Image (cartoon, rainbow, N blue to C red; front, side):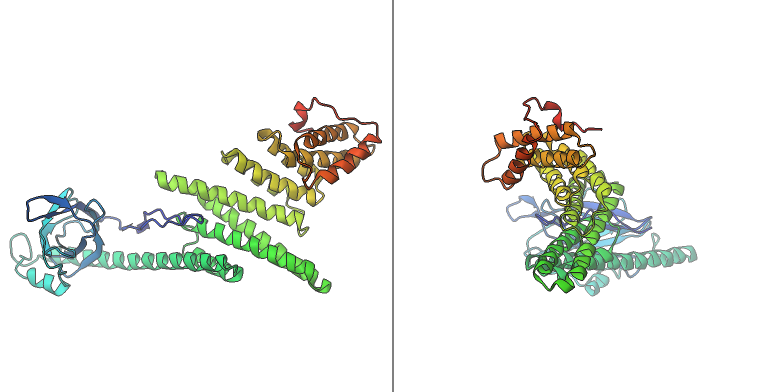
Amino acid sequence: MFRKNYYTFLLAAALFFVGSATTYAQTGMASGIVELKKADGTVVPLADVVIDVFRTDIAGKLPSGKTNKKGEFTILGFLPGARYAVAVSAPNIRADVFMDIKAGDEKLRFSVIEGDGKRFTEEEIRKLLTNIPKNASGGELTAEQKKQQEEQTKQLAKYEAEKKKVDNINEVITRSLSEGSKAFNEKNYDLAVAKYEEGINADPDFEGSAPVLLNNKAVALINRSIEKYNAALKGDPSGKAAALESVKKDLTDAVAASSKSLQILKAATSTDAKAQKAYGIEKSRAYQNSISGYSRMFSMNVDNTKGQEALTALEEYSTLETDVAQKAKWQLFLADGFRQAGDSPNAVIAYRKVLESAPENPDALAGLGLSLFSVGAGKVPEDTAQMQEGLNLMQRFADVAPETHPLKASVKEVVDYLKTKQLTPQKNTKSSTKKKT
C-alpha cells in the first residue's frame, strides 16, 4: 500500500510547506552522510549533494535526492535483495560512485574530494556497471531469480508512478495556495475561492493541506459576502432579495468549509510535534471562521436559524482557545451578532461566556445588560428580576466605559426607562455572569 508520510501545513499567517517523502510497502531504506575531505586533511559534512541511485542487477533508477545541511541523506524505495549503486555529485567536488548498497544499510559514510562538479549521466553509470556479475556467483540468473527481478521491476514501476502522482498533487496544492493567496490579497475573492478549491480537490481529505485550504476558502467567502452585503444595501432595492440570498450562500459555504476542516483535523493521528502545533493553529482558525460566519448570518439578517449550531461552535472553541483575549474577542463577536439579530436569549448565553474570563469587559457588560432587559421586558408579565440584573450590568458598564463608547446612548436610554419602573442599580452583581435557568 502506497502512502504519504509527510506533514504539510500551509499556514495562512506565515506560510510554510514541509517537504514530502513517500514509501512503498515491502521496500526499505538506506541512510548515511556525505563528507568532503579537503586538501588539508580536514573532513566536513557536505550539504546539497545530489544523490542518484541506480539498480546494478537490472535497469532501474530511484528518485534523486539531496543531503541536508548536516550532510545527511535517506534513500527510500529499496527493494529486498536488490543491489544499488549510489552516485554523489555537487559543485566543486569530484563525482563518485559507491557500490553494493542495499536496503537496511545505515550510517553509510561517503567521502568525496574537491573536483570539477561533474554529475554522471545514467548512461555513464551503466558503462561503469557493465563488469558487475549478474549474480553472486558470476553466472546467469536462475529462473526464480528472473521471476523475482520481474516482480521487483513491476513494484518499482508502480512506486515511481505513485510518486509521480503525489508529486503532481503537491504541485497543484502549492500552486493553488500561492495563486489563491495572491488573489485574496488583491481582493479578487472569486478567483481566490476558485484557486483554493483547486487545491482542496487535489487531495480533499489530507490533513496536511486540506484544512489550511478550507480555512482560507472560508475567509475568502466571508470577505466576499461582506462586499455583496454592502453592495446590496446601496444597490437597486428590487435586487436586494437575490443579493442577500447570495450573501447567505457564501456564509453557509464558509461555515461548511470550516466544519470540513475541523472534521479532518479531529481525525488526524500524527504525534509529530510540528504537526500537532499546526493542527492546533488550523483548528483555532476553523472555529473562528465558523463563529464569524454565524455571527454575520445573524447581524446581516440572512439566516437566524443557526443559533444552536453557533453556540456549539462557541463552546468547543472556548474549550480549545487558551489565549483569554483572543477567546473573549470571538465570544463577543458572536454575542453581538445575536444581539443585532434580536436574538436576546442566545445573546445572553454568549455574553455570559465573555464575562466568565473577562468580567469587566465593557462591551460584554453593555451587551448582556441590554439583552437581559430585552428578555425581561418581553415577558408577560415583565420579569423585573432580569431587568434588574440588566440594569446592574449597565451601571457597571457606565462606570468603566469611556463616553465615546458606541453603546453609551443605548444604555442610557434603557437605564432612564428602568428608572420609571422604580428600579435602581445595585452594586453587588458578582452573580450576574452566571447563567439563569
